[in-house]
Image 1 (cartoon, rainbow, N blue to C red):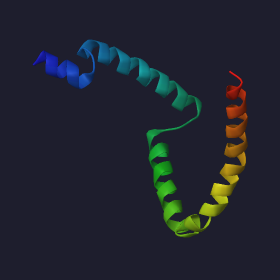
Image 2: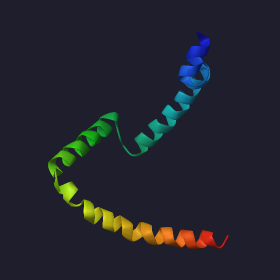
Image 3: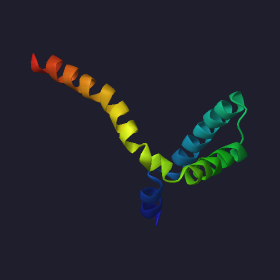
Length: 88
């Protein structure tokens, strides 16, 4: 039984509890520093999907623009990195 619990949690329950407490403190500190609350995060996710829905097919129409804009940065960086690694 204990092995199944350890395998499910990824570690012993005590160590997982300590890790969760530490991560909770760090996340709580960061959220407090930015004056965020859990409700703010939920509303942000909701607003994201509402904006995505309202944009509708306009986002798909901009696909080529997004692709070309990204390619204008990615392709030269790729070529430069390949040239720098070619010398080695």
